Image 1 (spheres, rainbow, N blue to C red):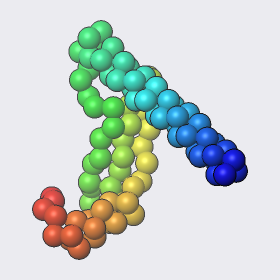
Image 2 (tube, helix red, strand yellow):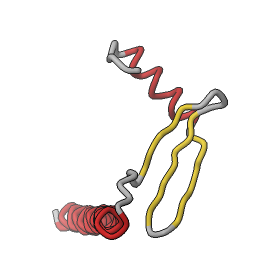
Image 3 (cartoon, helix red, strand yellow):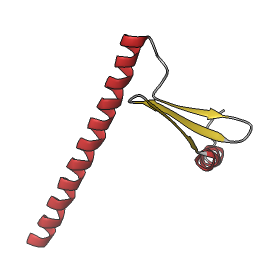
Length: 90
């Protein structure tokens, strides 16, 4: 009985730490976005998915840095899931 309780305690500790990190990260991104909007009038979103003729790109603009990643595979998987589940999409 004590072993099962210890395993659950470890799970909840890990879950709590993961939620803390996630919520803190989302809060930092929100503050960065609002600060850019108020200070510079820059209301571009933090993350944006753009479909091009060559594939799909994820563009991220946060904390004064810009990054671009190719997410064509994830986009194809999402399209498949939407088609399979008869979910309307673009």
